[in-house]
Image 1 (tube, rainbow, N blue to C red):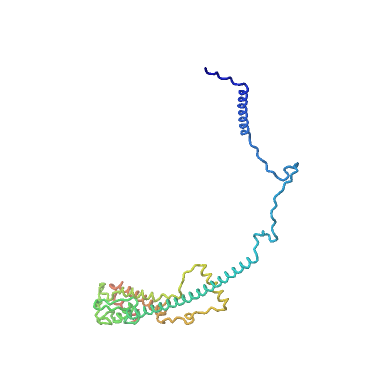
Image 2: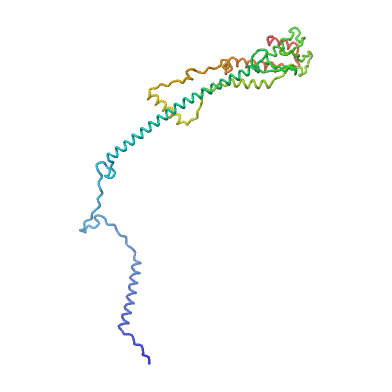
Length: 327
């Protein structure tokens, strides 16, 4: 027969209930502590506790030496001597580099002078060749000068070319001053080819005009003369920066002053360049160029006037032109 369960003893029940009540109190206390606002802790300072007998000590910093630097930051005499030697070595290296640069500058300047001299000589040779070409191929057979405003005679079998003013003078030299006409045949002064006969009646046809402009010869002569006008290059221009030019000039002055040297002219500058006198006459303002321009203007003016009024000119007009030309 099973046994009946024993009733709980009063002491065990009381102890268990008391334990449970204690846990609840602990939990309530923990919640209250968490909900309580936190207080800020005040920093302790000297004199904050006047009633306290505990002395408060402050940290002491190391005092700097007489030179104002710490002992670890001071430079020793050996280090100073080492640094001074390094500076002297750097200074010697810089002086050596400056001397090398100055020598290079002097060499470059000499090469520039030589190059400019070669350019001038080449330009002079070119000008001489141009002048010889003009004198060989474009000389007027009447005045023995370079052709100015060249014209060719009208007959196709002739083809000789002269200055405009020269051929006009030659043509009107055959005009009879008394009647103002050409009673004799007019021929080429070189090959004796007969020109077109000038009719006495007006209006005349333009085909009877005895001259034809030689534009090819005129263009070649003008271009060659313009080349003679341009002067040769005197110096070779080298592009440099602004600061580079200033620095280079200062170095040259310092070098000359330090070595006691005076600026010497180059041999080319001292001797000068021999310029052909015939070429110099064709420069701007030269006598040969001025004479050529004068003959060019006169020939152009007279030839254009004659061509414009050729069909209506009378005998008296031809006589006045003959007097004007002085033939």
